[in-house]
Image (cartoon, rainbow, N blue to C red; front, side, top):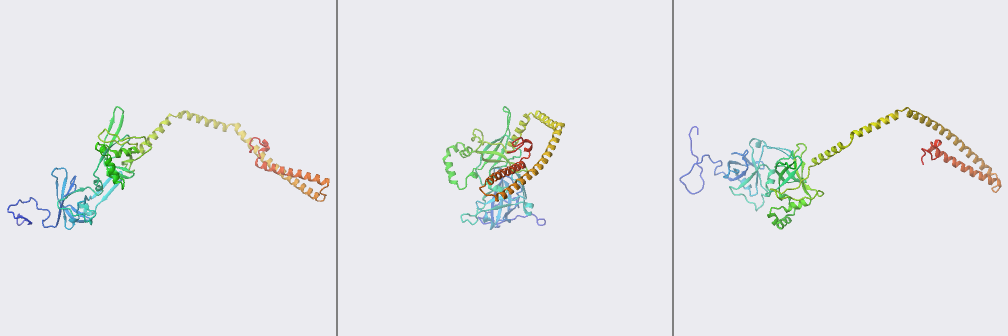
Length: 440
């Protein structure tokens, strides 16, 4: 147009003949003869959406954003997209669209999560989509102009699939530092809800501070696997209570010990989350009504219980008469020191050492004497045996000698017994048998 000047472009299309037209302020983004279909994506904010933002299917560009505008009620942003043929047939009623963020950094109870997109995404962002069961004959391509929700990321698709939200109120007496809006509510590691608000409650009359935390449960997550029919029957049986705003299912869970408490999700970041579990040993409690939201009973966090226990131990230690105990211990140590350093005690030790030396010498002498005596007795017995062999068995002398030998044998056994006893109880030389220090 620099040389030829302005001109008017025309695109012909099928239809009835017309003679008057209204020109467009901007040329159409997509030519009328371009095969494909247009769709509309709704979202909370435009973000990086703009004309030309690419749309991918499994990392292959299949379309682009052709217009970004506010909805008629100004409550959301609408992005008109165009998917080239034949990829437009991949868009079905159950298709999910989500943004491709260049850098996605999140910090929460699960820790630090960093996701970096491809080079193309880093430069211009993008949108991608996924359609399950493409080969299902009952699944047909969506018509042109169909609307879809644009999710902020892939993980939020699962959140959006749950349409029911039940709000509850939790009161915590301990610190909620590290708990933030959006933190998960979990039961044994399975997410069942989200923290939606954290407030502050000060009771001046009771001099008490409580932290109200509002959470939203996803009831559909709590449906037991394979128990859909039982859940539907339960809802039908309690339809009257549910219509009055009661939560019979939650009431039953709390009757069985369901409680909520704060737990640390990540030691590095200090982020907290709300943990829900069963504590059957706790005192009975009920789901409280009367406020804006039903109130679920809570328990102190593990850290708060530990801090309370340490505080009680310190308080009990402060009640002990530590000064008096210290003075008595000091007196005991000083008395022991005086006793061990006294001249009388040292003299007693020297006397005891001398007595032990004498006992050792006496034992050596006794061992020698007893050994000699035993040898003499055995020698006498041998001589007597030889004499008996030369005498008639029934002679009076033989009888007398036999009796004498028996007495010698008894004496020899007694000597052996005495020797064994002295070896086990040498102190009996001083104290006698069964005296002080002798062991039975």
